[in-house]
Every structure is written in structure tokens, then in C-alpha cells.
Length: 161
Image (tube, rainbow, N blue to C red; front, side, top):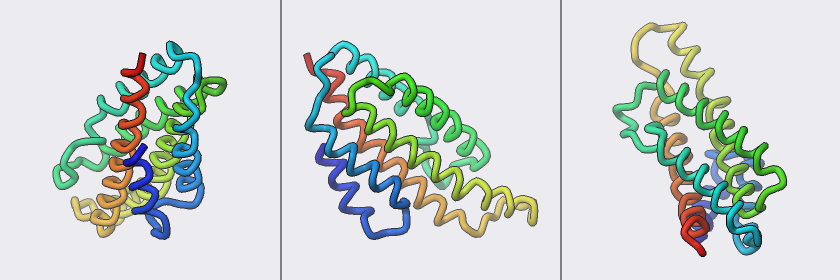
């Protein structure tokens, strides 16, 4: 949970994430103190979320080597899987659901904000140059920071007995 609090302190007051995402971050932090009693169900949901986060290259690849079309496709896969998992967990443990909702909001908002900008730049100029690439890279790094911070409490739940 410590990394989630660090993320909250780092991004509060910036324009990287909107108020909805920051609110979900607060809910996720608060929910970590209320671990759901059904450990088996919690562990199954946690393991599914961890596998998703750890399997996507867009969450780990060097940003300077990132293929933006591939990154957006991968982020959409992550978004769709998180949305499915959110539905699956609608009656599940709040401690896990809040983290999934946080990640879903962050990824969804990133795609909304940056994919249209990228596509517009490619229609105007067919070169690899994207004027907002640096800002998009910083924002993608922020998504990764939230993802890695969320992994910490998820791994604790997955390994608890």
C-alpha cells in the first residue's frame, strides 16, 4: 500500500491524471485496509489481475523503443481485460475491485487523451514524428507507475494464507 500512497502524493495537483482517476486512487488506498474475508475468491481475482499486468509489454517496454500503434492496441487489450475483470468482481472484494477500477480508469483515460492526438498527427504527416510524443511517453510512464504500485498490494493478497 505504501507505493499507492507515494503515487497519490506524486500525482495530486498535477494534470497527468483527471479527478476521477485520483478519486479512484483514494478509494483503492482506503480499501486496502478492508481485506475481504473470502480468501480463495480474493486470491483468484488477484492472480488474474497480476497475470494481466505482468503479461503486457506496453507496461514494461522502453518508451523510446515503443511502437505507438502497437502500444495503443496493447493498452486497449489491457483496458478490455480490466473492464471484463471489473464486471466479474462487481460483488467481489473491494480491496481488489478498487485497484482494478483505478487501473481501468487510468488506462481508459490515457487512450482517450493520447490516441486521437497520435492518429491526427499521422494523418497530417506520415512521418514517425509526433509532436506530443514526449508528453504521451511521460503519461504512459505514469500509467506504469500506477500499475507497479497496484502490484504490491495485489501480490500481498495473492501470497497470503
